[in-house]
Image (cartoon, rainbow, N blue to C red):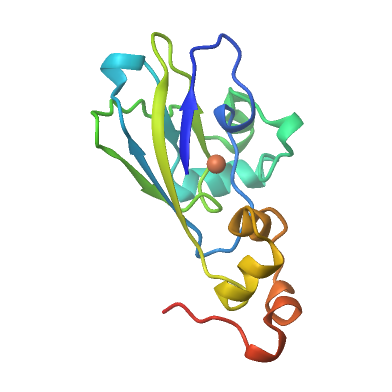
Length: 165
Ligand SMILES: [Fe+2]
C-alpha cells in the first residue's frame, strides 16, 4: 500500500501512539520513498518491554479517539522514562516491526509530503483466494481490523486454514 502524508499541525490516528489490531504474527514493513531531510517526518517505535509496561499502566490498545501523542503520564505510572527514539530515514530506508506487539506512531512531515510504502505480512485465516472472493477490497485490512482467534474455524470453511510457515 502506498501512502502520502502532508504537513499538518495536528496529529491523529496513525500519528498518535497505538498498536495495530491483527494476528500476533503480523509484520509491518515500511519503506520511505523520500527521506527525513526532505520532509521532516518519520516513525517512532517503542520496544516490546516498554510497550508491555505501558499496557500494564493502562495504555494497551486505545481506540482511535483515545490515542495520545505523549505517554509520559503512563510511563510515570509504570516507573519508567518516556524517551522515544527519533530516527532519521534516508530514501529507500525503513522499518520492519510487529505492529500488534509494539507501540508506534508516524511523525507528520513538516516541510513536504512524506511518501511511504507499507507491506503488511500476516497469516490468512482462510485460503487467500477464498478471502479475496469474499472481501474483494481490503481483505487483509478487514482480517486485521476484526481479528479474533475464532477467525480460524469461522473462515476456514471446508478447505482448512492456510498455513504460512
Ligand atoms: Fe500502526
